[in-house]
Image 1 (cartoon, rainbow, N blue to C red):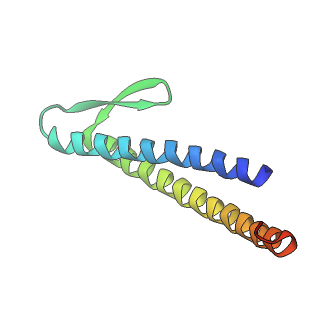
Image 2: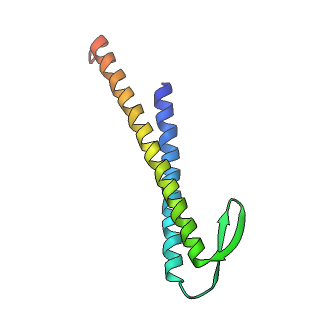
Image 3: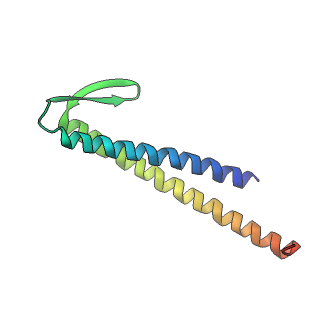
Amino acid sequence: ARTNSRLMDVKEELSAKEKYFQNLTDAEDDLMMSEGDTELVPYMIGEVLVEMSLEEAQSQLEKAKEVCQQEIDGLKAKAGGYKDTLADLKTQLYAKFGSN
């Protein structure tokens, strides 16, 4: 039961990280479309908006996307481990009790 709840928690966190990654991708696309419009663009760091140049903002977005992708990969690996554990437990239970 604990493994199953951990798997559900990881899936929820994975979903949130994938949504955040998509938001970063959308922000990067918006920056590319607005190239040349303004010299400074607002960039949110935590709860604070900071104005930075377009190149700096793109660089920060790329770094944030890399970090987010690494976190997503780690969560997927963790979820895979939990799924393997659950499959092993299921096999052991069917071996012990049958498939009634």
